[in-house]
Image (cartoon, rainbow, N blue to C red; front, side, top):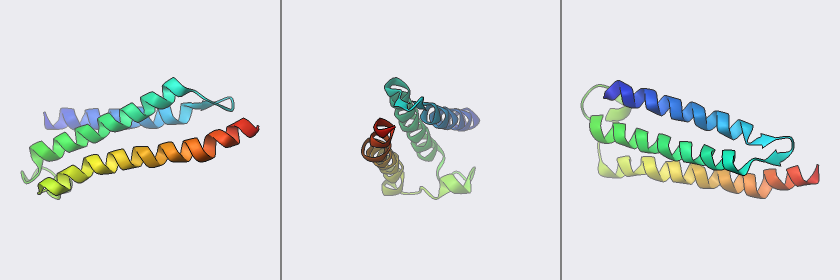
Length: 102
């Protein structure tokens, strides 16, 4: 289960990057791709949270062992949502107006 979650996390993160990069084609924002990019980021965060929830303190990963408290585990979800919100604000307030000016 440990390696399945790691592979799923990596796969969804790669999908997030690909969808994000392809959401800006031909000076337009592909809204469906952009939404799926956010969705794959959220799913990646949920997978990392699940890994921390299941395997922190087990000694399998020093990265996951860092998340030894509930507040640290919750920060994974907070960070994921914050990253998504900041990225959305950047796209909405900076990138889309630049695309409209072309």
